[in-house]
Image 1: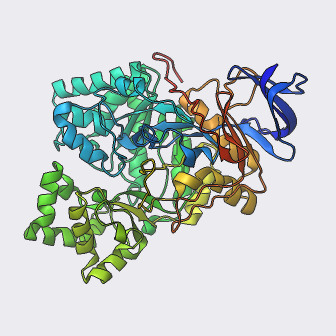
Image 2: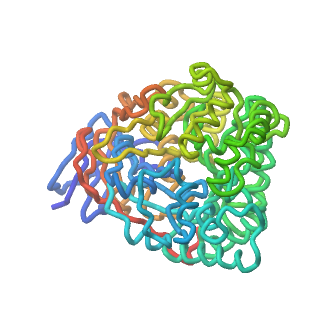
Amino acid sequence: MLDLVIRDGTVLDGSGAPGRRADIGIRGGRVTSVGVVGERGATEIDAEGRIVTPGFIDIHAHDDFNLPLNPQAHGKVTQGVTTVVNGNCGLSPAPFDPARLAAHRDIMASLDSGLDYRWPTLGAFLDDHPPCGVNVCQLVGHHAVRCAVMGMAPRAPTAGELDRMRAHVDAAMRAGAFGLSTGLFGPPGGHADADEVVALAGVAAHHGGGYFTHMRNEGARVTAAIDEAIDIGRRAGAAVQISHLKVSDPGHHGIAPDLLARIHAARDDGLDIHSDQYPYAASSGGLRFRLPPWAQAGETGEILARLRDPSARERLRHDLEEGMARDRISMRIYDWSQVRIGMSPTRPEVVGLTLAALGERDGKRPADALLDLLLADRLATRGIYFHMSEADVRAIMRDPLVAIGSDGLYTGLPGQPDHSNPHPRHYGTFARVLGHYVREEGVLGLADAVRKMTALPAHILGLADRGILTAGAAADLVVLDPDRITDRATFDHPHREAEGVDDVIVNGVAVLRDGRATGAVPGQVLRHRAGARR
């Protein structure tokens, strides 16, 4: 007898091929057959009128800062996600130097759910990872690596420091990391030049891993940032994954087709390059990174001192209101009325307000309201930025090299109310693509959308036994109703779970059954095989 049989569903196998009616047999955490299954199952699911797909792979996630505390990953599972890729944007819980733990915590503050940071190496973190409701792939973050060796120093590394950073990346890759990630938008990783990144990405490439990058600029200089990512990949011999591809400068809306053409040209020239995207015209991240670069230099105490100093405050006002626009700095405030406060640890009552509304409420210029809030929160404040265009989102979504990733972040603790107002992508990304962009808008076909969530990210990661629904594959599956699947999370109510996903199977075990969580945690830490090429 089989462990599980899913009967009479329309199977979209992840390849992009049209759906076909089939049964699926599962035993021992593996798919035994896809077709007519005569053998009975200890459990059977009637999928008549619904589609069955491989489990969705969230190629851009930040769940490593919350899964150790909330291992069921309910917000992801209810969308059909069975595997998350953590450690993106240069941010990972490890490695770190205990002597620099305070700086490490400060860098991760806007993501952190309260981890105790007992893992000096990424391998220790993975070894200690609890069982989860999803599988976990992990990247090693450049911010973490650089801080472990150099702290927040705004300079190039010495030869010895670079060797120590390379050793950290090497150890992480040997422990099963899938590659190196960078967040070149801010410190400490933003202090690195391309040569430093090439040296570290080359270590990842030596082990068959990739280079995953939140680029240096996603606004006025996004074209140059793509060129830098391509150059790093070529010089390091690494496959390139451009994180959450977007155009975040309103003055440059409409250039997405040019960016995609640049990426395709690099691929035609022999570079293994892809990108990912979340299906929203707004981004999110720490408000500290919207300060001018000079103000972000150093450790948290130094930054806070600048925010208090009257002369530095005057310079900050000028740069926030005028200077950063003149200098075409990407991570800046384009419109105070288009930036919402997403999280404030010390002032939860202001969450949901725009910076313009906060300034008006407090009788301050928006720049001063921002700086005072960062002071109160010790830089841990998060924002949501409505700086993108729907036309660019759609152009990027249609591109065949673009996978779907949530960039989702949840910071709530078990049994405690979450007073944050995060970006709805944590709860809605995959359901939004299938419901809004496929069913309602026709931007993608259903089979192609599923490919972007399954086979494509599996190919990028080198996961040979996931992402395609075929005999012998790991039994990660989703049963959903294409007529009902809907993202319910909004910017005003971001914690609403998706609807329309009925059953989610991870390694042969149901984590969602008839739309209800089972409490099972069959997810595994998936380790990249050292030495394997993608």
